[in-house]
Length: 109
Picture 1: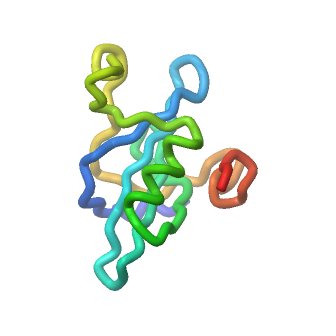
Picture 2: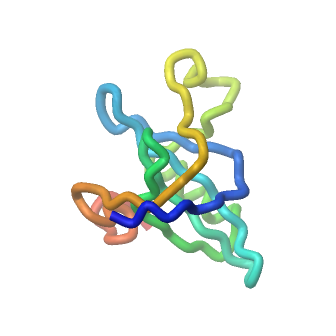
């Protein structure tokens, strides 16, 4: 397991309730070298397990919503009342089922 720390700039958390007491999290990172963005997926313990690239932030947001993610600080949801979002430092941590989103197994384009 690669425990190298990974710096993420975004602080707009997205969350998907996977099952009781388990969430998958995402941040949309803007790429400095291009107009593309990268959705970075991580678990409750700040371990990054997958990434997906999109041409724009708008397309990334649309994909997150389509795939069951919600904005953590959405005033219409009460996630902050019962779920604390993972905090830096972030690091790579393999998911037991591999790259579940970029493989297409659990991601709808």
